[in-house]
Length: 421
Ligand code: GDP
Ligand code: IMO
Ligand code: MG
Image 1 (spheres, rainbow, N blue to C red):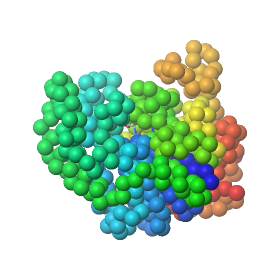
Image 2 (cartoon, rainbow, N blue to C red):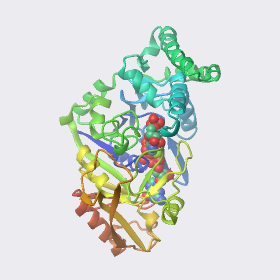
Image 3 (cartoon, protein in one colour):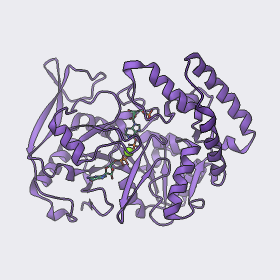
Image 4 (cartoon, rainbow, N blue to C red):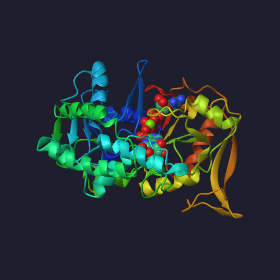
């Protein structure tokens, strides 16, 4: 048995949470492999909406085991708040949510460092979520981090050593640390909550499960274009969001990866700064934002919107080795008379189809324009009843991308999903 991976192919918020929830009945274990509470994964069913930050999106479908893997960075205070809110709807989670001892802890001072580094960048801010993600992964790589397993022995001492290093840096920047006392108290309450959970060596747990033939789904956060190596650096997050991240983030060998589900929106969005070749600054962009309700689920920030970018998508499919595509939010285009797709870029009069090292104002998208379907698809549940123009759009994308579209999503609800034959 192999482990399947589900990840975003664009700049995040593709709808990963919804689809993990839809696919969960087919799996026994769902495991998050990277990122942290910078993620906001939305699920809707039975008239209710939930936003998950650190907890995997398999938590609502039956008694499945959900794992927070070693590649994740965890903020105990936010974890506690998330768990307490969830437990009001789904009851106790202790027996079905397991946490890797090797996951790294986001400290209160990491959050301050995130804010401090952003302020110091002036006009070239990344536009981070402010959750301390970059500084926590920095400490992991520089071998200064604290891990979940550390809370079991001599924790205060390890915490104070790490905190003092951060305070030293913050003082050098003249950054105000007076908020620290308040957030520290909440944070230690979070540590107490974390101790109520089973802390595991998740790499052993997952590899044993693979041997026993159990079906496992690895859930990504963010998207391929935010990957630390292959995204639009430095306007990226600080982890490997690509399929290979599931191997390092869970301790799974590459030969044990099966299907790679790549999710994309029928158009494109981005939050925060950084290049976005197909971004629209006109009424069409506003319409995408309004109809797609494109406001960040973590920060509430309006998302930047534009047409689908097939150059960037092909690049993501290549890096991730996607075997099945999932197209989200097609219904948002229901009223558009025409729809555009970027099939190449033009740079200094030359057409290019490989995603380049640098994306700047010289680069112009080359579009193909298609007739829209102008039909409300939000209540369509069968593939045979989809409008012809939409089926043509799917066929066009499959030809351009070279991978079959396995699922189309036509609304935020669990039920508004078509799994294709
Ligand atoms: P994630 O971070 O990839 O899980 O995505 P987010 O939850 O941040 O953003 C996706 C947003 O789109 C959420 O508000 C979802 O409820 C919503 N959504 C998901 N699929 C669809 C869809 O097919 N149509 C529409 N209209 N909304 C969708
Ligand atoms: P999900 O899992 C969209 C973006 C931030 C910023 C950059 C770096 O919900 O798809 P960070 O706080 O990670 O250091 O911010 O990455 N970003 C996301 N954008 N969806 C996300 O997660 C994101 N997580 C981080 O806006 O541009
Ligand atoms: Mg999101």
